[in-house]
Image 1 (cartoon, one colour):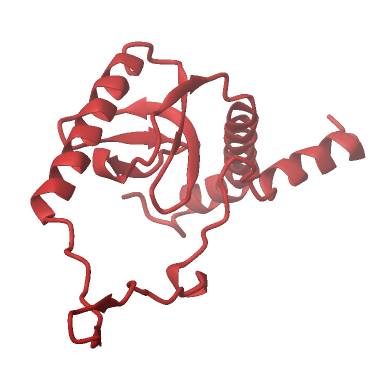
Image 2 (cartoon, rainbow, N blue to C red):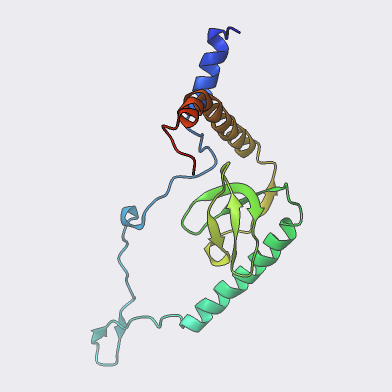
Length: 174
C-alpha cells in the first residue's frame, strides 16, 4: 500500500504541531507594572505644622471576608456548571490568565480545568477573578482535537519502530 505525499505531510504536521494557545492571555508580571507614588494629603495642625499621617489600613478580617464571600459565590457557580459534563467554561484568574476548558474533579477547595488533551491545572476558588460563564469553546475544541490527532499519529508512527525492538528483546517488557 502506497501512501501519498500529501497525507503523509499532513500526518507529520499534526504530529509535530505546536498547540495553539489562542484563549490564554499573556501574563504580565508584577515587576513590569508601573510603581505609583503613595501620597496622602498633608494635615495642618493648629500651629501650622504640616504632618503626614498614613491612612488606616483595611483590617485583614474584612479583606478575608470579602474574598471568602466571592469564593463561596464562585463555588456555587462552578458546582452548577459542573452538572453539564460537556459544557466548556470560560474564567479569568486573578493573575490575568483567561482559561477555557471542561470542569473536572470539583471539590470544596477547588477544581481541575481540562484545558489540554491530557488534563489541565488545578484551580482554587480564591484564584478566580470574575464569575465563570459557560461558553461554546470552539477554539479549545479544535486545539484539543489537534492534540489528540497528534498523539494518535505519534503512536502510529512509533509502533513500526518499537514493535520489532520489543519482539527482538532489545527493549524489555516492563
